[in-house]
Image 1 (tube, rainbow, N blue to C red):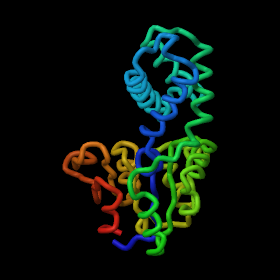
Image 2 (cartoon, helix red, strand yellow):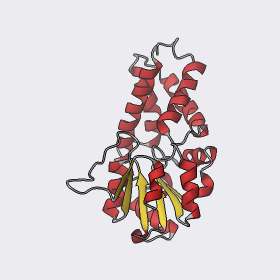
Image 3 (cartoon, rainbow, N blue to C red):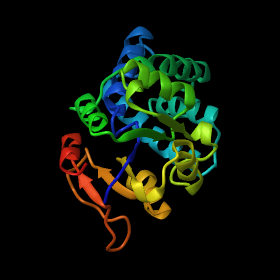
Length: 236
């Protein structure tokens, strides 16, 4: 297949969300002296945050909750795990977390080198992300990613979330791309890969987690599965 347009997910694919969120929460844990407030185990606090964040994002994608509820409730529920029912603290954590998180710039290994390689091969690169417009652009600027991408399609801008067909249609229209010359690269089988597959777009599943190949459904597998970004050189 001859591709011209490469559509990347951002969080968990290029930008290391878990590392950056951990660094941000660690800073807040110290600066707000959360240990004195009853959070006696930072590792458990971070783990609980990630679990609540993932569940709430799933509810957000399905339209069950709004943006602001997601932002505050993930902190509120993490505090409740330590029996801290402090709404003001949850809101303060939410605000300060969103101020600090986009300034973090840890990427997965070889991200900048691979993006430079793809640009030199004359591919046109784009982002399709379910993240919020302002936050995602700040992340990209802090991590020096902005210059690599022609279009940055956020769910907020497209008024649709992956895996909905509408966000992929919006991305193709904005980029002037045809589905046959495009491929989606992302970490989430349900959100990135299945969404692209249902659109008729080829996919590359970026599995940083457990080095396994998984089907989209039944016996249907992604067009490619990779475990390191460096493997894109062999495909593109």
